[in-house]
Image 1 (cartoon, helix red, strand yellow):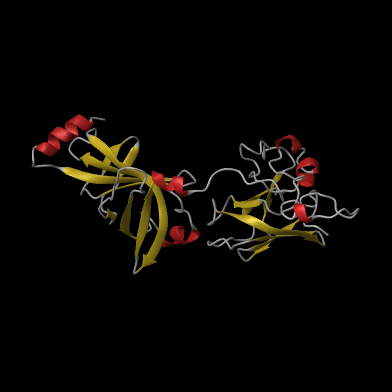
Image 2: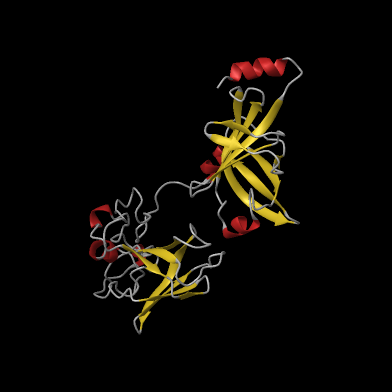
Length: 292
């Protein structure tokens, strides 16, 4: 890649450049688009012409202000479909925008890197907000001193391996409306074992979609799992799903269910907010909860 050659080309005044966008979804699927009239290829990606995708002027600033722009395109089965957008497949997808000398694609410069924000759809087209890397600095960081664990199950701070046998399973859907799932069997797991965990669809039209589990109940040899939000693509009986165990963030759960107390990220023994007003009593356990 030669930025210098591109700069020399731009200084001639008679330029032949185009813009290319590479979109990488969270599930790893990549798309390439260009506003040139022919397909371009570099870095192992083919940037397709004729997709109807264009972008507004890029706003870039110095300092920590968030760079932003907007991408507008037509909805089509060959590029980006309305069903995929509605299902959330493009939420938080990574975007790279390049300025490319189309006659020599090796001469290019990366102008923007960020993620897709809010997406709107209307009249057979979509408009996607693109947020720069500085957007991540708007996310609050640090620790909160609270009774329950702050770690996300399976991530680095937690340290628990969710691939451990007994903490996940695959099964075939018996019935579902997109939010409530029923499974025959799965009696090897205790009731509420998957509560606060995840359900991921592995096959069928909704393959790749996932949701957080709200309730997990067992009755009459049927396991019923309810999600907080409905999955937005149809799921048919017989589709295969993966269920992953959940954690309610309590110290007892970390110790007994996951045997992972050494990595517990909560503070169960801190006094309550009104500890200074406490009076001697045998009933108060000083466990971080409210005074009785």
